[in-house]
Length: 151
Image (cartoon, rainbow, N blue to C red; front, side, top):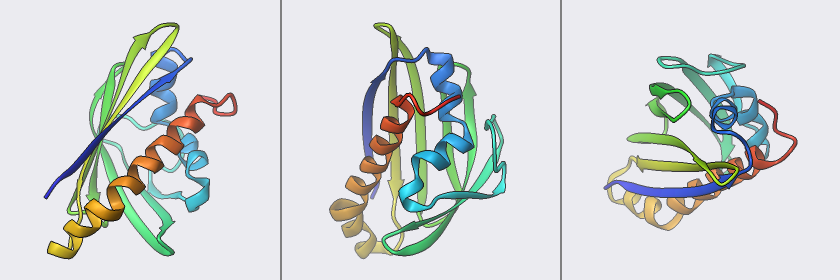
């Protein structure tokens, strides 16, 4: 089973600035402070580009988790895609799109994932994981929109 969702966020930043901020490892770490997320391998600071990998370590559901992802598509300043290469999901794909819009940027996040563990995983996807991941993306987007986030 695949779960997917889309988040639309209007941010008063230019597309190129928001594109760079969205692929900035340090900004990601700042946006995920609640889960103590850290980059522990691969690109651990600065901007990610096509082909780059990063391994994240974070705490979710009171468990330490590691996930390695790679930038698999990169079209500056319009879109990029990151996909899990190792980690807790059967698969995880996040497409980031940036569309100029009314003095800023419409940022669209398209997320697709599947949990492991068969029937139990499918139940977790529907009951917990979909909402939890959407909330993480929305939290990240609020951080990117804040004046405290710098590219």
